[in-house]
Structure formats: C-alpha cells, structure tokens
Image 1 (cartoon, helix red, strand yellow):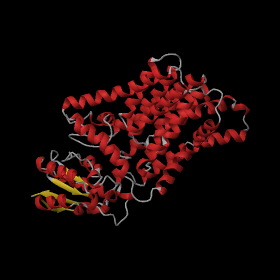
Image 2 (image 1 turned 45 degrees about the vertical axis):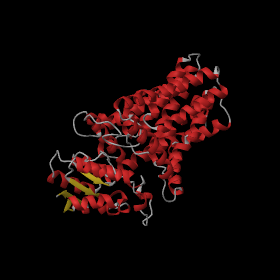
Image 3 (image 1 turned 90 degrees about the vertical axis):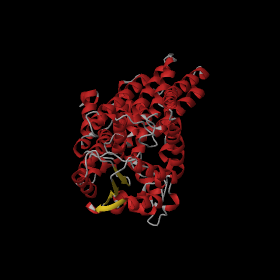
Image 4 (image 1 turned 60 degrees about the horizontal axis):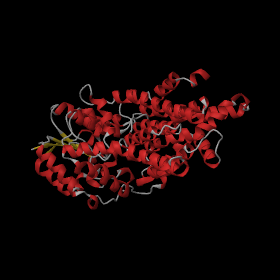
Length: 494
C-alpha cells in the first residue's frame, strides 16, 4: 500500500477510477457541452466572442477542441484528457511541496490532498480543473525562484497569466504571490516586476491577436465588461443555502486538508519556509472572494482551492506521515477514514446518480426532442434552442443557429433555479442581445426553433420565451408550431 501511495501509477489509477462515471454517462455537466460547441466552432474556423459567445477567457474553449477532432462534438476525448490533466496537476504540486519542504512525504501528501479536493464536483472537465495545472506550475516556479533563480519569477507570472486565460479567478494566486514577495521576499521590486511582467505577457499576446483580427471590441465586451456585470447581477434569491451546501461539501470532502491548513495558518510548521508559506496561505484564503462572487456557489467553483490547499496542508501531513508508526492505531484509522470515505462516497454518488438517470443527457424531455430533431430535420439544418439546454444540440447532432449557445445573457444571465416563481423576466431582457439573436436567425435562415421553457427544462419555465416580446414576436411571424415532443414546443420556419 505504501508503494501504491508513493507512485504516479497509483495516483493515476485512483484518478481514473474516481472519474470513470464520466466515461459511462457522457454529459455529467451541461457546461461541458457549451464549451464543446465552442471548441467545434473554433475547428470550423469560428472565433470565440464573434461566431460563438460566452464570458470565459479563450483557453477553456481551445482545450475543448479535443472533443471535435474526430468530427462532430464528443465529450469522450475531453473526459479522457481530464484524467492525465488532473494527475499532472497533482504531480506538479507534489514536486512543488517536495522542493519547498525538502520532504518526500510532504510531496505525496500534497498530491493526494489535491486529488481529494477535486471531489467536490462531478467528474466533469471544468475551467477550474483546466486552470489548476498552470496554477500548480506557477507554485512550482515560485518555489524554484526561491533557489536564487529569478527567471522562475517570470515563468511563475506567465503560468498565472496562462491559468487566468482559462478563468479570470486564477489571478488570485498572483495576488498572493505578489503580496508575499513584497512583504517577505528578497529583491522585492525586481522580483515583483518579473512576476507582473510574466502575468501580462499571455494577456498581451491574446489582446494583440484579437486586435489584429479586428475584433478587440468583442473580446473586451465578453471577457471583461460582461464578467463585471455577471459578478454584479448574477446572484438571485437567497444565497445562504447555496453557500452552506457548497461549503459544507467542499470542506467535508477534503476535511483533513482544511484542518491542517487552518493549523498552518495559526502556527507555522518547521518545514514551511517563507515567503512561499505566506503566498500559499494568502492565496488560499483570498480564493474565498472569487468563490463567493455572484452568490451562486456552484460546486465546481470550489475546485479553485485545490492547489493552495494542497500546499498549505502538505508540511503538516508530511510530518504526520513521517512518524506514522508512532501514531496510535485510532489516530491512524481516523486519517484513513478522512481520506477514503470521501472517495468512496464520491464514486458511489456519481455512479448512483447516473444509474438513476439524473445527468443532463438522461433527461427524458431532452432525449425526446433530440430524437425528434434527428428524425425530422436535415443534418445540415441549423436550429435555435431557447433556454440552457445545449445537450439538445449535442444529442441531435445539429449546429446552433445563432452565436448564443444558451440564452442566459438575453434575460439577465441568471440561473433560473435560483429565481422565484414570480420573477419579472421582462425587466431584465437585454435588448441588444435579443436583436443580435434575431439578426442571426434571419441571416442564417434557421429552420427550427426549440422552446425548452415550454417543458420547464432546467427551470426555464421561469424565463419563458413569451415574455421576451421582440423575440417571441419574430418567432410568431416567421415560424409555426409543428410538434411538441416531450412537451417541448418545436417551431418550423414558414
């Protein structure tokens, strides 16, 4: 067992088993389909924020081009990629902890804590999972920079910049590293400048690319402006219940890591050298800010904690493992339970959920309308789905008819499950986005409109098409109702 726990092969096998439900049940998170459609658009020559729109930075969509390499859109290649990506993240954190503390035990402790911290979300490939690998590399570079190798400060900044091109929130690690350098580091000004310069480089290259393509306005609009609006307006309904659910789940899954991180915060362990200790702890506790922004508290938000949590807990868990045989049997059993129970519970939950048909691709309303579209439309016919049901495009193998893969931004970018039944949709309609939707429908001569709000898929009965007056009027004038498979209204162009 000790050999298993200290091997990359053991870590890989554990990750493979824990993520195996994603191979069995296809869509485990609706966001994956959204990213996959954007990846397919890129392979077809499209440009994110122009031909297909969303508010995340571009590297997540580039990663999901893996799902379209063999034609169409498939999540299997992405799910396969997720296993070595996660294992690589854990192994990089292992090396960072080992170099930082000088302890092999601390290194492997960091790797396994990182794996545990990833069990707060179903085994999907999310922007957070993707950004954690460059964040782990940034932490390794930060440790190497403390070996009087200043070029690693520049590389550290580049890694943080690359991570934030998967998701903005990754920049929080850069904040923690910068504060620690200015507070406790040597050659403070030079090293902080190298860190900042490295962070700017990937963003400068991305901005230059969009400027050269003549679409800098669209890039700024979707990547920056709309993210500010998202954080400001996205929360709806009481957020406390969502906070409790997400936080309790995250803390319980990696309880041993959080307990040790709190202890490290209150009292430094002997092997946790500065300024890395300060950088890791500041980054860990500052991560609560991006997790809380918007009041949504989705489970995948908590994946952001994995890299700093792994390093924060590593020195103490490494020391614990170093004197393992001296620990009373009851104490060893408690450690084993704290590590194994979450893994067993996670695997049981995800498999049971799939067997019960509770993943997005198993929704019978979605399956019914998708089958109808396969049987009653041409493969090259574009469709438009009103709602947040990109699984319809995926299962029906049909191309989106507009740049909007889901319709959240047209109605305030809310999660409808967070909205009260009496929510006033009309007062939150985004007229420019509705106008752009209608323009796409007209320009692309979209043949079919699928209204998922009519069947309350993903709670979209709270955001009905009929309340978006301009779009509803366009559909009434140019389309006719032809079917209602699974209660989902389908309209064909007149």
